[in-house]
Image (cartoon, rainbow over all chains, first blue to last red; front, side, top):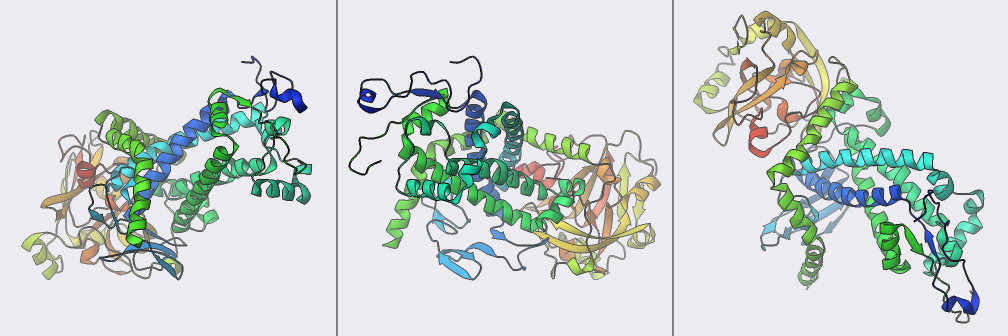
Length: 297
Length: 252
């Protein structure tokens, strides 16, 4: 490995080649992810999984969401998971769908019917325990916040933000954005040297997770703490009250799950072995353009 | 038919999550791992205390912000014929004992409580379950009561013993002196300008506004000043703390 920290797309071990020679030469590799990115990525993967699953456990204790400062069983909720003796329901606003088997009314491993909102396979612990869900959530909140802070500082000072995540003027142009969206929609991904760097949609996805969703998660989490409310009441004013913070916390969680799903799909489409290996070792093999099949690419 | 599809879907979910989940359940049951998890609580307590002063107030609201109904939760009734008799006589003979590590033990009637220095505050009550209700509380400030009882230097915690039982066991809670002496800490006898309803802990409940609802002991019979929580209940400082491992520091 290189001794000096490498940037995305640097340290190419073999020059990129084109044409007929490509099949004869080993595909070029680049040192794509530095140590901090790799450590943070996997720490975050475990931490967010634990946070989401223990968070769903906590949600199960009161499966309703409100806007404003207060909100309890007699107050209007904009979202609710409820059950009757025979069925589970998810209601968002005035739209209600039956969710029997998945939400509100489902069978556990032992075949017993349970009527908590999220099923046991989605929660930590798998059995109902608000106290234990909180223990996990409130411990891993520290892991999330500390690793997040360290990674942001490293990203800032190592140039990761400026060099790899910064969206250039050219990339902001509507024609460039539209071109990338079209290429993604056709499942045509960058190859060769272009694959060594993040494309604009990748940058926007990572930026929205690192600089929007995760900080929002931490801020809304802090806003639910009565002790922290005394220390920093302005957070409540900013978010519109504690129950609004709880709703935003839930919505940001859905945003992270949406990112995770897209992330998984993209890894699978882009070559899972190469992608996972690059996040373990740092080294990424540049995908080569497939032989043209008359599409002129 | 839809049942079939749903079962298959939850089966797929089960298979995908199973190894991770059974690992988490095993860790959850491991006492050493639980000790590590519990470090989170200690870190929250110390960082929150470092970020504010002893007297930093919890946010207060106006009457326009009140919840239309203030939800009662947990025990909605004191235990036994003794408590029922107190309800029947309007708590005329109710006494709150202040004892333990004090130089002057007290036995306060409700008339005494009402004659002590008062505080009125509109605050948000947050249940550990996730819901919140805003109510207007009036009560006697705890700090002057503790001054009158003359706390000994060895006193580090207050233990509140309650007239309600859950599963046959009396409820209790405890706080440290930082919260005991906080200006918003009161023994509330009024909610929303009415006598405290039985369901909310009549005649008297604790308000410590920087912590969650289960710390707000209801039906208070006695306040004991102690040096340590060891030997009280299971030693974790409260009914729920002892039984299901809720955090003793509930500012989170």
